[in-house]
Length: 157
Figure (cartoon, rainbow, N blue to C red):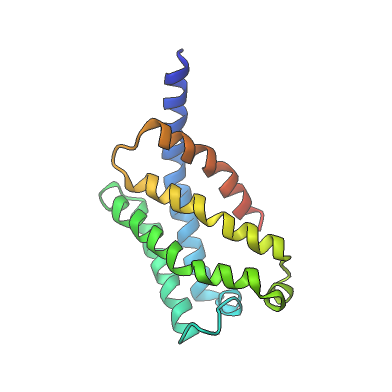
């Protein structure tokens, strides 16, 4: 088997695996926003108005992403929704990086908070990959290589 067909197969398989995993990931995190909002309320910056509503709304948003990502006809829109969500919540992650007291309360080191921010970029790229109907193999390869360590990181939290 040629190297290029091995890479193409790896990329296709990773994409097939990543879609349901990311759907479950977003759905689960969204559900956690609704049934156990304490963690999300604890990391909410003081400049965000109506924090309980914001946590509830982002939870519904994530559940929507998770559900709609699973069906091919809605996958593109769900992936774009995921990108919007990741951009919308990025200020919260930045806030945690600079709030030493919040890191202490959450039992995060500042390095862990920064690492958490770093992993937002692969999530955006993976969502972008899922949004494309026919992504290039090279972009798919990059996203495939980012997918596994990103999922591993979030599973170990």
